[in-house]
Image (cartoon, rainbow, N blue to C red; front, top):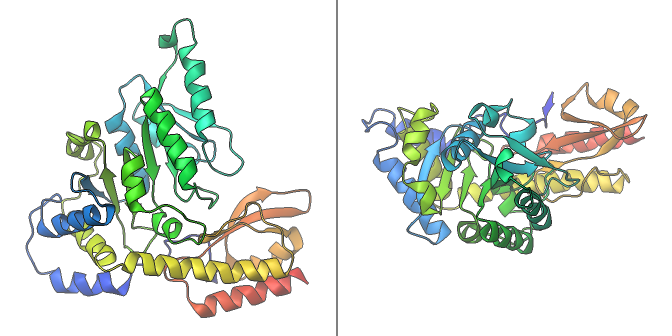
Length: 346
């Protein structure tokens, strides 16, 4: 089978394995209080262009999302997200289990707009007694979105402004951040995110690491007691040095961005095959996620040899699917998939 279902099916980049072999017999302090985590955090601060950032390492995306949101919000406060947002549709109520409601906003492209946030806040504040509703306090977005789309710098600036206007935190889920920042349509960088977001994270699990996400806190209001919440939520890894080692390996010389760029390039090869075959897309994109709409008969043949994600019916005889490349996707797999897609179209 060809694995195009997700971007975390392979283990990790070989450079991480080499470092694990080199450091596996060393002794380190526990819970992320080690030199490897310290070096990785310093590297992230350098890349973001700010020495005042708080950096913490957690194991996975859902754990990171619920920990950040639980740490930022009071019991009566809520987070808003696109209706397709990961915290709303793909985390089994993990955020709600911390006591915080997710307010879902309609979206056709996976994005939340500044106008939607402003409308939400105006509606809340215009109530005769707003205290009868949860108080919106955080805006959750992801980069790329669940549909592979990207916020422009202008869109992020607008969200940043409206969040400042209404006293909201802006939280960016970067589980696939590498693929977003290296996409040809991207016009933002890490320094922009550190300036506009109160908190964001650099995803490792889906971009070459065995596991791990690096939380970057720019707003000092959220930084002070964050380690308490990591521990309370069960997210403090005893062998924390394993996280620091991986992020230092990925980030110190740009490996993270090189392997993400490779995944995007591989996705572009698949897109061209689909475009040449006049296959429509659920949404356009330039990251490692591709969303073609194929006939049921084509998918019946394709599913015998390819693992993909079913996105649901497009009409009575067609379905949208997601094909996802990763840092480990090789040329042979792409060539075979393209051949199968060409054959399925005939």
